[in-house]
Structures are given as structure tokens and as C-alpha cells.
Amino acid sequence: MRALAIPSDWPFRSASRHIACRPHLWHVQDLGAGPLLLLIHGAGGASHSFRHLIPLLTASHRVIAVDLPGQGFSVLGAKSRCGLNHMADDLKALCEQEGWQPQVIIGHSAGAALALRLAEIMPLRAVVGLNAALGNFEGAAGLFYPIMARLLAMTPLIAQLFSKIAGTPAQTHQLLLATGSRIEPAGEAQYLRLLRMPSHVAATLAMMAQWQLDGLLTALPRQKLPVLLISSAGDRAVPASVSQAAAKALPNARWINLPRFGHLLHEEAAEKVAPLIFDFLALSDPAA
Image 1: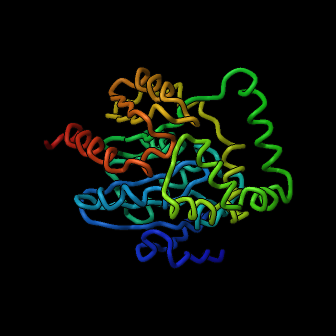
Image 2 (image 1 turned 30 degrees about the horizontal axis):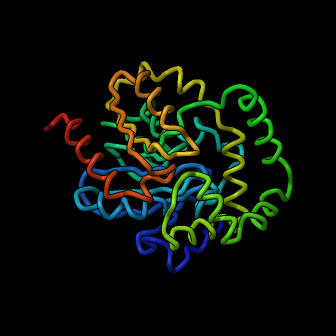
């Protein structure tokens, strides 16, 4: 597999490297020193989504941010391995190969579901979910959305067509506004770059088509690790009630709902999110 070139203006490009771990070629960013935090972005995002949070976290921690297979600048090695369990298994294999032992995983949206799945199969101290996507679609949407996602993922040239349609500044701006978030122009430009990459779009569609949460949601009452779920009242993609319900199901969870911000909470208000994470880490540290 050939590595994708990282743009010269990509956040923390100097910390980027590609790692081959079967079946994928991963793009990771490794910064800071101290206890290890693993950052996992949501569907359709990339490690750039943590660009404002990383400088705050690296003041006291080592941070590794990964691009999920096929998204961002990771190269997908097996299209059939885009579901929750396969992605978690492949992330665990990457950590084991590289000797990474993250104490805490911070996941945004679908990345929070991956974090909780990883907590079932590898030793962790705690999990943080940012606007965690921990609910299934309800009613007719629950029936038809997965079917449509599978059809789109299987249809040739859909990714190229979507990239052409959505890969404009105006369309990117509208897509981001639809999440309830307003981010800075440089952040919008980074999402525009991703939307113009058919490989990124195709991998995101494959992830959506293969995504199944039933097993994870059933197991939530058995997850004893400390979990912090931070949601935002203005999220139009994943309502705050999803995090509230998950926190009730988890035996050792804390839920914090911030006003006003949208789905990209950590991009809009990293300075508000970071202290909440640090307070939680201090409380959940067995050595404290």
C-alpha cells in the first residue's frame, strides 16, 4: 500500500507518521510525554478534529491520535473491516505492535463507541466520550438507514460523485452547520480537503454500512470502568439525551452537558472540554 501524502499545512504534520499493521496502513500523530492518551475521531473526521484539544492535553500527557482505516490519511486494507468490532480489533493490534499502553481513550462520536469496545478487550483506566454516538436509529430510520448506507457503500463511483457534490466550500460549510457547530475557517478547509478525497468518503460510507451497536449497548451495564460522557445541548447530529441514557446504563459513569455548542464540541470549545477531562482523570486515578 502506498502512503497518502500529508498536506504541508495539516495540523501537527511534523508529528505524523504511517505505520503498517495488517491489514491497514495507519496514519498516526504522536506528541507529548507522560501517561498515554489515545484519541479516536468520529465517522467522517480525522485526527485533525483534535487540533485544539491536543496542545492542552500534551501539557501533561503523551497523546496519540489515529486516523481510522481509510479515513483521513490512513489507507484501508480490507473494506470488510470497517465495523465496530473489526475496527476495535485492528486498533488493539496496532497498539500491541507498537507497544502502546494507553491509560485512557478519548473518543468523539462513533470514536466513543470504539473506545468502549476497546475497553472490553484491552486494559484501560478510563474512557472519555465526546458527544458519544451510543444509540441506534429509531423507528423507520432504524430499518432503512442501514440498508441505504449499504447500498451506497456497494455502488461504484458513489464516493467520487459525493466528493464532487459536497467538496465545495459552500457545501462543506452547510454540512458542518448541520451538526450544530461553527468552527474556524481553517477547520472548515480541512474538512473540505477530506470531502474531496474519494477514499475518505468511501471508507466513511463503509463504516456507516457495517456499524452495529447492539452488542456494545447490551454490554454497557457490565462495563465497570470509570466513564466520562460530555455532550452539548446544541448537537444536531447526536442528541445529548443519547449520552444521558448511556450514562444511566453504565455503572460508573458521569455525564456533563454543556450548553450551546454543537456536535464538534471539542473543535469549538477545547478550552472548556480539557479541564473537564483533567478533573475526571484526577478523580479516576487509583494512585491519587
